[in-house]
Amino acid sequence: MTDHAKDARAQDAPTDAAALARLPRRPEEPAAPVQSTAHTVRLKALNAFYGDTHAVKGVDLTYAANQVTAMIGPSGCGKSTLVRCINRMHEEVPGARAEGEVLLGETDLYGAGVDLTSVRRTIGMVFQKPNPFPTMSIFDNVAAGLRLSGTKRGDLKERVEWALRGAGLWEEVKDRLGSPGVGLSGGQQQRLCIARTIAVEPDVILMDEPCSALDPIATLRIEELIHELKQRFTIVIVTHNMQQAARVADTTAFMLAGELVEHAPTERIFTNPDDDRTEQYVTGKFG
Amino acid sequence: MASGSIAEPQAPPSALKPPTGFRHADPLMQGILAALAAGILVLIGFFFVRLVVEARPAFEAYGFFNFVFSDEWVPSKGEFGALPLVFGTLVTSAIALLIGVPVAIATAVYLTELCPARLRSPLTVLVELLAAVPSVVYGLWGIYFLAPKLLPAEKWFADTFSFLPFVDGPVSIPNYFVAGLILAIMVLPIVSAITREVMSTVPKEHKEAALALGATRWEMIRMAILPYARPGIAGASMLGLGRALGETIAVTIVIGNAAVIGDSIFSQGYSLAAVIANEFGEAASDPTHRAALIAAGLLLFVVTLVINGVARTYVNRAETAALRSVPKGMAG
Ligand SMILES: Nc1ncnc2c1ncn2[C@@H]1O[C@H](COP(=O)(O)OP(=O)(O)O)[C@@H](O)[C@H]1O
Ligand SMILES: [Mg+2]
Image 1 (cartoon, chains in turn red, brown):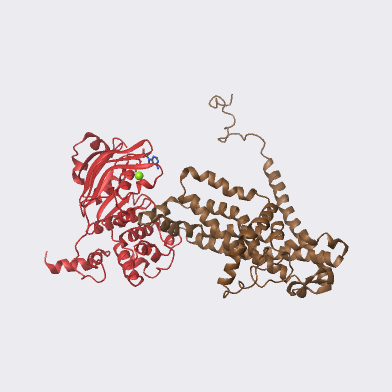
Image 2: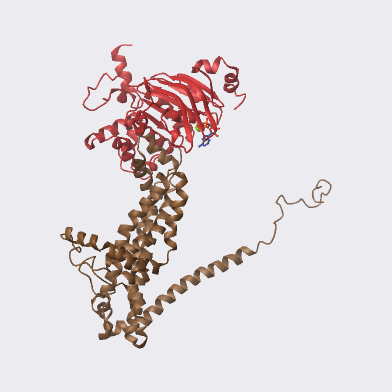
């Protein structure tokens, strides 16, 4: 493909993927080329507990940078718990604790002296139910994280627009940034939450069943978005929908009863998995 | 046996299960409850009319406008200007809210979000016990213990911040500020209980949204909890205000009972409720005095209604604004 053809394609892009890739990381930095800042995430012997309940059992797993990894498995197998260990949200549950290592690049997120707020700023999270702040406008929702990290007032507008473009929402909301975020449709709300997450420029984005409250069209938009976001971020998506995993994920990990059964390229998981239990699950024999 | 319907082809049995028990109680119950509700309204209306009728001699003798806006209340000379009383009522209640509401919110935030789980219920009970102390005890404690102890601090404050309006001047032991402070302690339990209730309804998703953005606990409280709970906190403050406006015995003990408009928050004053409690005995023999006290009661009633009405509209508006912004379905 010639450079010219590449440019033409970028201009034809249905959403703002090209804009996302082109926009500078900081306003004062040169516009292009943009290096991805995403890191690999490695879980080492990760265990998670709720009181005496052992919800995640000795998981070793590597999430490659700039890849989408899907987590599948029957309900209650520990997918949510696992991803919540990655940004240390797990420990917010009273009585919950985690053991083991979560390495972002070379940094152990559970190491001594690690600042919880910077862990969460570096590893963003999108939840199952769209959860924009109900009292905040669209603009303020996206700016919420930026304000926490002390972004200057002057830069705020630019950053918010960047994030909304990145989430493919800018064109739909640019004329009503001041209206309440919860006035949007469910799909738009979820993209607003994605904008809020990417606004602070994390390395990694965790998504816990981000489409389970959405209709098929809204789901499709989010899936397209995930394709675009992986150019810049490392993405982990929990899903109970195997078609979705097949559509968006480069690799897929199958969990069962708190254990990691198998992690392989998505194609392999769905056509020729190593483990019988994986095969049974993906062919709908249980779960 | 009704179940063998194949053998009995006469009438097709109803697919519905037969009703159980006696159901006519519903309309009856509804009637009784409606009558009770109407009764309450009638009672309030009657109350109001009665107060107006009884207070009329005072208004006639003195003029309605004069009664409310003149500042001489000297029953022995037959002068009844209620302004110092209205003033005292409003000032002490305002001080009560200014001090009580922030403390109540802080208490509620601490109890719902910050305090260790095993301390939560004992502390909650402790705060609620404040409501169980009789107001006369608060009054006594206020005048014999709190007011003398506060005196040096009040003097220092009056000297240091004398440039502020309504602060400079001599400090008396019973005064508006002490009354307001006692009222603040008295409104604290109700305001903090309701605030706590509202805060505990903040959905977990909102709190997690804030934490997942890298908010500290305090930032999460500011971002997700306080804005969500604001209408409820406003409502709780209104209930507290109602309590403060009408409080009688504690105020009369610590306000000094001087029917003048004080020069500062550290001056003696009087309140509508306190004047009624103190003078109703001697007023029995003087019809105008009696009418003036009833008029003071009417005024208190109206002030409370107006303030409540204003506050309620404000709270309602906040709530409708919140309602208008519910999600428009999940499509999209
Ligand atoms: N807040 C909690 N308290 C106690 N146990 C929990 C809690 N959340 C989840 N669990 C338990 O942990 C296990 C894993 O749950 P989860 O990670 O939510 O599964 P999944 O997301 O795969 O459906 C389940 O057995 C569940 O009952
Ligand atoms: Mg889950």
